[in-house]
Image 1 (tube, rainbow, N blue to C red):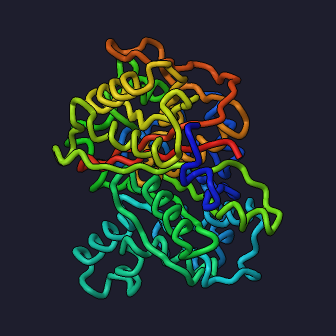
Image 2 (cartoon, rainbow, N blue to C red):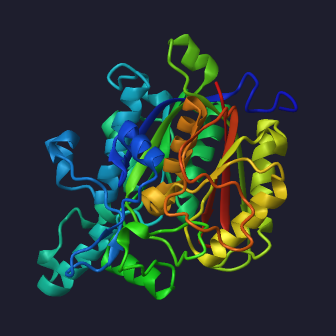
Image 3 (cartoon, rainbow, N blue to C red):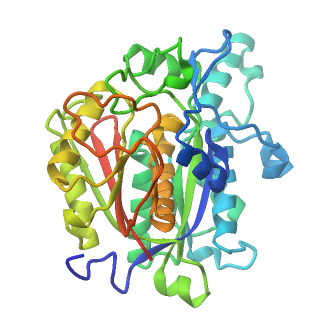
Length: 410
C-alpha cells in the first residue's frame, strides 16, 4: 500500500457478515464450496420454460421468510430477504436489539420485481382488472427489494435500491460504504438481488445475442475467457454483506472478515449495450478504486473479474486487466459456476472476493479449456492456495456503468 487512504484510516469500512443465496448453494458456505470446485451449475430447462439454459437458485421453505411475507414479495425480494438474514446472523447481530435508526439498507437490482410484473400483466390481459393482485404494484416496484429488507430487519435508517444494471450489487456496496464514511449510519446491510428468469428478460437477452446456445452441453456453459465462449447463462439469487466502520465492529467484539478498502465507479458514455473496445471506462474505475484504497497496481494479488463469457465484454476486460496489472495476478471469473446473476452479480462476487482474501484460496474459472486469443491473464483452472492481502472485484453494467471494489485483509 502506498499510504493511509480512506480504506485504511480511522474511517475504514469492514465486512462483518456475509449472506449468499445463489445457484451454487443456499448460504455462503455452500456457495463458496461449489465455487472452489469450479463446476458449472447450468441446467437445461424444461421444454415449457422460456429459456434453454439457466442457473437456478435452490428451492427453499417459504416459512423461512415468515408466513406473512412468504406469499407477496417478488421472487427477487425473497432472495434478498434470505441473504440479508444470513448476513446479519453471520455478523452476530440481532435486529431486536439494535438502534434501527443507525442501520442503512442498500440493495442493487437490475430487474426488480420482473416476475411479478409479467405475471400480473398476463393476469390483467387474461382476466381483466379483477384478476390482478392488489399487491401487484408494491411487489413489482424496484424499491420493494430494499423496503422489504428494511421492514424485516426493523432498519429505519437510509434505505434505497440501486440500479446500474449488472453492476448494481457492487454499486450498492460502494454507496453503503460512502454512507458509513459520512457517518449517516453505523451498520449497512448492502448487496444485490435479481430473479429475471422470465419470458420477457430471457427472450430480450437472447434477441440481443447475449446468451449462450450451448444446448448440447449445458454443463459446458458459460465459458468466460475461453476460445469457445458464446455468451452468458442467466442465473438468479442474492448476495448481501454487513458493513461497519472498524471502530464500531471492534467495540462490539465482532469478527472482521476483511476490509472494503476502495470503491471506484465510471461510465463509458459510449453505447447502451456494448463496452468501449479500449476499456477506458473500466480502466478509470479500476484506477479510482486503487486510489480510494491508497493502493498501487502492484498490490493487487487477485481479481474476481466480471467475465460473463460474451465475446466483446471478455475481450475488453482482459485487455484492461493485462494493461493495468502487468505483474499478472490470478484472475477468476466465477460466473462460470454461478451463471450471471445480473444485478446480484457484483455483490455475490464481492462476497467471494472477501472469502478469497480471508481463506487464501483463489477460485478457478469453470469450463476454461483453451484461453481465447488475446487473453493474456493468469486464469486458474483449479482452486489455488495463495497469499491474497489485497484484491479487486470488477463489475460492468449495460449502459457502460462500471464499478470496482477493492478488498483488503483485515
